[in-house]
Length: 298
Image 1 (cartoon, rainbow, N blue to C red):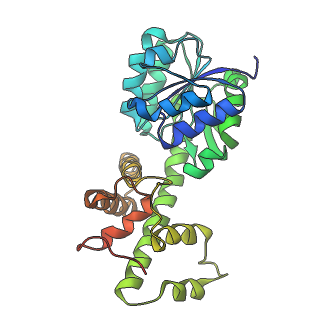
Image 2 (tube, rainbow, N blue to C red):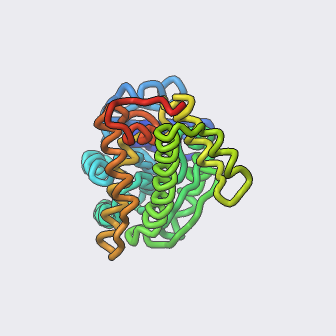
Image 3 (tube, helix red, strand yellow):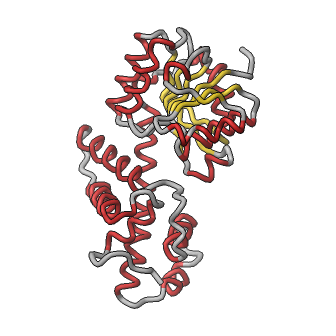
C-alpha cells in the first residue's frame, strides 16, 4: 500500500478542517464535505476537492475519515454516502460518540464492505492545527498499513486499544479521558468564580499552589482564557463539551457507575450555552456560576 492516499474527510468543523489541512500538507489527496458548505470551501484553496454531497465526496476514497458532531450525525452522513462507498475502503470514525453508536457504525461498515476503525482523537483546536493530536484507535491489524499514514498525518501518537472496532475500546478510553478534562475545566471555572465572589485575587490562589501537587498546567491554561477573556475562537466549544458530558453520564449509567461530577458539568455547560456562550471555549462554563449575566473574573 502506498503512503499517498485519497482520503475523504466528512465534517470540516474546527477539528475536521485542521485534520484535512494536515493530510494535504503530507501529500494525500483530500476530498472534503461539510453540511454547511461554507466551512469546507476554504479547503479548496489548500488543494482539497470540496464536494456538494457525501456520496460525491467518498468516490474513489482509500480512507473515509468522519469528524462529525456525534454518532447519529455520523451514521446519517454515511448512509447518504452509501451509494458511492468503495468496497474495501477503510472507515476511520474520529467523532466522540456513544458506545452504542460505535457498534451501530461497525455494523454499517460490515454491511457495506468497509474496514472499520474506532478512532476518536484526544486534543483541541491547536493540537489539531499542528498535527499533534493523540489518536485512540481500535480495528483490524490487516488494515493498519492503510490507515497508519492518515493517523500519522493528523496526530503525534496513535494509541492502539484493540483489534475490534465494534467493541468501542478506543471510544471507552476517550470518554474516560474526557471525563477528567471536563471535571478539571469545571473545577477551574468554579474556583475562579468563588475567588471573584469572595474578593480573592486569582494570582493569590495560583501563588498558593505553585509548584505543589495541586498545581497543573491545564488549570493555568483554562484560567488564562477566562481571566483574559480569550474564549473565542474556541479550542473546544461549550456546546460540544456539553454533548460529550452527556455521553459520559449515559455511559456511566449504562455500566453501573453514577457520575455526579460529570452530570453537574453537563448542566453547567448547558446553562452557559443558554446564556449565549455555546460557541465559546468550554472554559466559558465559568459564567454559569452567575445568574446575573457575564461577569469578569478579574
